[in-house]
Length: 124
Image (cartoon, rainbow, N blue to C red; front, side, top):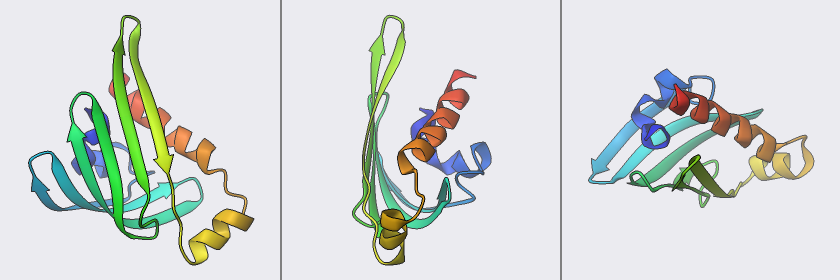
């Protein structure tokens, strides 16, 4: 539930989401304008969130710095806890693409830190 609580990301984890503005909500689909910090990357995106609680949360980036990217978080209940499967297809354009190719970008590690912050929130 915490992963799809995007309306409160700015309050819950401001270090990663300095700004979140909901543009529209229709059932389990929401369009959200997000200012997202992942490590040293600062992204301004328009994202379509599709939630099927408690099993699935998907984010399709429909505009901005990472347009065409897709984030999928799938939650599997096990006896010993919840397993989270994460699949990220990240696409950059322009200067962001060059920075990702030639810069010191550890996106995987930085994204894991973001996920760790979400998990800490969920466990409390």
